[in-house]
Every structure is written in C-alpha cells, then in structure tokens.
Length: 396
Image (cartoon, rainbow, N blue to C red; front, side):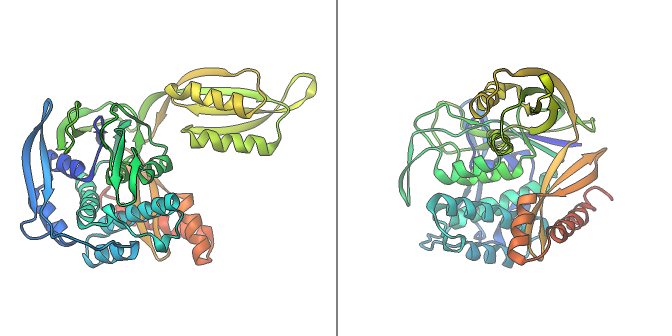
C-alpha cells in the first residue's frame, strides 16, 4: 500500500506542491501536456533546482500573459471542462474550485453565483489546482497524511485590502476539514488559499508521519525568505499493514440533569473542535436516576481542549480519561461526478483493495435538496460511480 506524508512545516502553496511532485519524479512532459490543456503557453513552464535553507528543492514557475479578468466559478468550470482531461482530474479540480467558491461566499457574505475570484481566479492558480489534481492522480497514494500546517503570520495586501494571516478564505477552508495549524512567524503568509485548498483536499488524515518504508522524497520550493527552510516535503513509502495503529484518548462523563438539546449542542461543538467521534448512551445512575453518558474519542493532544468544552457546555463535575490503541483501515477521499453534481466519497481499503465507499453526507444532502430527489438516490449513484472510477486502479 502506497502512503504519502506531506510535511507543511513552512506552509504550502500551489507551486510548492507541484514542485514537490516533480521532485518525486512526476514526468515534466506529463506536467506540460496536462497544463497546456488549460492555458499554459508552450514555453510557459520553468523548473529549477534551488536552495532553500538546508534543502535543495525543485522550484516551478509559470510565464503567463498579463490578465485583468476576474473569473467567476462558472468561468473556471468552463475552462476545466473544455480541457477534456480524465474524469478523476476534472471532477477533483471542479470540486476544489466549488469548495473555494463556498468559502469566498461565506466570508464575503455573497451568493455563490456572485463570487468572483481575484488572486485565485487567475490563470496561474487554475494551473496550480488542475496540476495538483493531475499530480494526485499520478501519485496514486492510498493514504495521504498531512502534518499540522504552519500558516505564517502578520498581514497581507489583497484585492480586498489588508487582511490578517491566515486570510479569511484560507481559514474557512481549514475549518471545514478540521485541519490542525500553528504559526512560527509574524512576518509572512506561508499558507496561501491555494495551498490550503490542495492540502485539505489531498488529506485522508492529519497527524504525525505514519509507519512506512520510505521509497522517495520530494521537496517543492517556496518563494518566502523566512528563517525556516521554505519548502514543502512529500515523503512516499510503502506500508505492508492493512490497517494503521495509533493512540487515542477516550473521554467520558455521566450527566443526569441536561436536556437532549444541550447534549446535541455539546456534541456539535466537540465535533467542530476536532473530536474524532462523539456518542451518547442512556444509563441508570444512583437512586434509579436516568442519565446520559457522553463519550468523546480524542487525539491525546486535544484532551484538555475537549475536556474544557465538556465543563463549559454541560453540568458535569468530573471527567474520566482512558488512553487506548486503535486500528483503523486506510482511507482515501476521491471526488466523483454524478448528474446531480460532484460528490466526495471516502474509500476504505483492505489488502490494497476497496472495502467500501461512503459518499459524504453534506454533499449528497445539498445535491438532494437542490435537485428535489431522494438522498438515497444520490448516495447510491455516487457509491456506484466511486467503485466504477476506482475499479481499474485496484484491479477489481
């Protein structure tokens, strides 16, 4: 099983991601052939070996004509569809721009069809995102783990004026996927919106480097003159295990004086702050009182944060902790196209083959309401398309 670990200790951008893939061995001609279909000039791609701090990395630059247009989502989709790329690349690219449009609409208080991309609607960003989608297809990793991401800090000048780092759209994309982040600088934007979009779309999980035999290492160079070596590192390897083992903390508390609405609210807050799972069980307490046991599955480093939420949102006076090992099947997220739109699907893998495919509820729910069809119909179609799309890859 192929595993990739993306180390974003100095942030990420679209060109850093493409540079790291090229450094891993993605053929330059294949990169050119793909990007020329979405507008890259014939001699518009430049790869160089550069030094960034302690590392020698691959830098990717585009030579592009100057643009004045601010494209909307439909304009970008038209460009991607007209390129006639493989379905996996087309669907993932469109899905990524749809996520970006939703984030922009949310932070600027606009309807989706009123969103016009500025920096990320330019041709170089379209090349970054389509290139990232094609590069992920080439990488063909069953499991992609992304480290906590260094966002940088300070402020940046944009079309909307001066904004704090990370920018509002970047932060919305990170929040959507419960991405762990941190900052080690107050001077530079290390994580761009495009970089946040690509990493959150790529990741099957976030955390430390998983156990694997290292086969190759790719380093993509950034453009920031920061104290840290401004590179994005991708480590690829082979895992012979059909599952992964890690440590989790189980947090439990018993409550006998909380309303169901209060418990539901607490669960939502816990999920939003990164809990791996939250569930409840009815219990009998002292003197026959009916109560509720709340159980939170947490990363060990998030124990205090989730405990603070339980103390804040419930009437509990005490909390129990247990550290446990868990084994989980490798997972991979793909985007498939249906006649109701693009749907993200999570694949679970066992012995290198697909064990199951589970469409993302939020995507299916939104499509069902928009199209006026049943949720079951959309989920079934997305599941079938996921198996069909991945059948050749896994020799089914």
